[in-house]
Image (cartoon, rainbow, N blue to C red):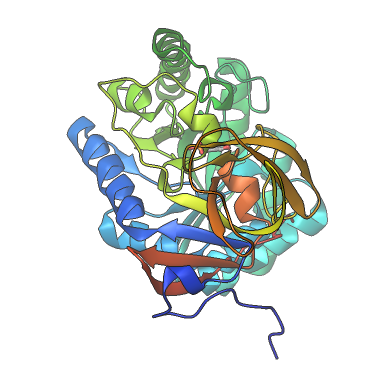
Length: 374
Ligand SMILES: Cc1ncc(COP(=O)(O)O)c(C=O)c1O
């Protein structure tokens, strides 16, 4: 029996949703999805949304039904949740290292022979181990070589290294070499538009040189994939990338709201909220029933969705607000919408996404890949 508490049921009025609850405004989610797909179509690139943001099969299905080619995720166990949910094209945009993990990845690929499963490598020895694991499991995998295009997180750094790893992949009969994974995460929250654009121009230049090196070595590079919400229009326009991987655009957060908006890029609406209840009022101090266990604060505290409040302390189960405007005084049990500082780790704190249209709950979706860290 599933003993998880559910904050809402489909058909319920928004006002009746229990707190704390993770809310998704479906009209705004759909607006964001159409906006990303239209911008990518205009640039002639594919969209493979990153599902580490939402971790939800129902959302992935809607993204693919609307035109995405598949989804990205970051871990094998995340991929397992999406494959089990019927998502047939999943790319793990990450390295998988170690015999146990490689065997699990190969077994997963073998369990879904009709699906496409891809992974990144940056090391020739790992490529050989992965090839052997796939042989043992009778599995096939798509493989991308990850290139460090400026972030300094992972990936090969020059053409020689790239060619060595790509050749190791091509030598494995169960692996299909697909191309380059060239994501620049640090660019996503570069606040100024001109600096963000320049950062990606440099990344695209590096990716172009690496792609040319692959061609010169007779290693066909079908896909150059990368990009996030803050930069994907630049990768899409670069003529180098043919697939983009934005994730946060589906939900958005207060950190992304601090980026300078580029008028030439789609403007995404804040679609994700944490609904919190007023549980204490002492003068101007109002305490809500959602804290660190409902809201990630790695990118700053949550921001109240309406005016008239400033956020004070956030502790395990509480967020303390102060009234800073002249709005009507709150009452115990009132419910407020908070914009999470960072959407991805906030979603990972919740079992359920309450999907709302207007003032009604339309659906309650499981956060299927919650806690999928392996
Ligand atoms: C490899 C990769 N691609 C895409 C994304 C999506 O980025 P965002 O959620 O900022 O759109 C991330 C996020 O960290 C990532 O690690």
